[in-house]
Length: 462
Ligand code: UD1
Ligand code: MG
Image (cartoon, rainbow, N blue to C red; front, side, top):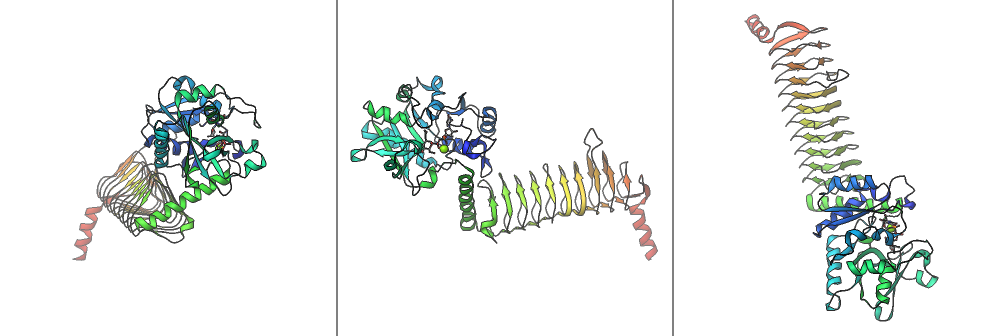
C-alpha cells in the first residue's frame, strides 16, 4: 500500500517517496518483499502515482512488479480493494505490506508466512503481525479475547480509554488467504472516526464468520515502526546510520573520528584501516578502498575510491573513480565519470568532468578539465581550462604523456596536445600541438622544438 499522501509528513511529496538511507521508502519495502521470491508484487499507488511507479521501476525489474491505482484515498481497505481485479480469483497467499513500514526484515516476513500456512495444521485465513510497544500511541491496538485469541483491531482514533492501554499494536503487515480477503473486504464499511475503509476490519469479519485469524508477535519493535511524520523518519535514519557505522567499525575495521557525525549509506563499502573524519557523507553504491584518509566535509556519491587514497577537506566526488594512492583536494570536484589513474593528484579548486587523468599526472590548482583525456606524468599548471563548450556542442581535449601545460593556459577544444609538449603561461591554444613542441602566446604559436632545445642546452654545457 503506497497510495496515501501522508498528511502527517506535512509535505508536497508523497510519503513513500521520502528518502530513507538515500532511497525512497517504497523501495525498501519492495526490496524486502522481493527477497521472499513471490510470484509478483503489486503496489497500490495513488498520490503522485506516476512518480511512485517511476521510483519503483528505477530499482526493480518490470516483470516482477505490477501497479494498482487507487483513485481516491479512502483508507487501507479501499487500497487493497484497488487490486481486486488483479488478485481476487487467485488461489494464493497474499502478504500485505505498508509502504511506510520500511525496516521490516525478510526473515520476519518468512516466519509470518510460515506461521500463517501452518496455523492449526491447516493454515489461517489471516495472520496479523503485531508487536508490543512502550508507547503505542497512534497505532491500531490488537484486542485479544479469551486464551489470547485474536478478536479485533481498534484504531487509535476509535479506541476507548481501556483499549488505549493495550500495548500490542498492529504492524500494518498481514498474511491473507487471497479469496477470503476479497470476500470479506466487500463487507467493510466506513462508519468510524476517520470515515475510512479500514483493512483492519477484515480480520474481525473473518473471525466473526468462523475463520481462523492468527497473530504473529514479533519481538523487535524497531522492525515494524511506521514512518508517519518527519520525526519518525529522522529517528529511523539515525538508527540505520548508527548500524552501518558500527558494522563498518566492527566488521570492516574502519576508523571513525566521530562515529555520530558520519553518514555512510547502507549500500556502500569501506575497506580496512580507512580513517573517516567528521561530516563525511558517502552515498549510493560507493566503494572505498583500504588505508584511505577522508577528511571532513567531503561527499562521495556512487563512486569508487582505490586503496591508500587521501581525500582532503570539502571535496565532492560523484559518479567517478579514483585510483590507488591518489590525492584529491582540498575543495576538489569530480563528476560525470571522472577517472583518476593511480598516483595522480588533483588539488584545490580543481574540477574534473568526464575526464581521465593519467597515472602520476597532476592538476594541482584552480583548473577545469572537462571532456578530456590526459596521459601519464603530465603536469597541468594552475588556472588551466579546457574550453570544451562552444555554446552549442561539447568538444574533447586529448593531452599526451609528459606534457607541461603552463599556468593559465586555455585549451580551445577540440584539441590534441602531443607527448612531451609544453605551453607557455597564458597561452590560448587553438591548434593541435605536435609532440615535443613548445607553444606560447595568444593565439599560441610554435616557439621551438623541445627536444632540440634540450640538445642545444647539452651542447652549451659542454
Ligand atoms: C495503519 C493501520 C494501523 C497500524 C498502522 C501501522 C489501518 C486502518 N490502520 O495505520 O492499525 O497500526 O498502519 O503502521 O490500516 N494507504 C493507501 N491508501 C489509503 C490509505 C493508506 O495506500 O487510502 C497506504 C499509505 O500510503 C501507507 C499505508 O497505506 O503506506 C498505511 O497508511 P497510514 O495512513 O499510514 O495508516 P496508519 O494510520 O499508519
Ligand atoms: Mg502509517
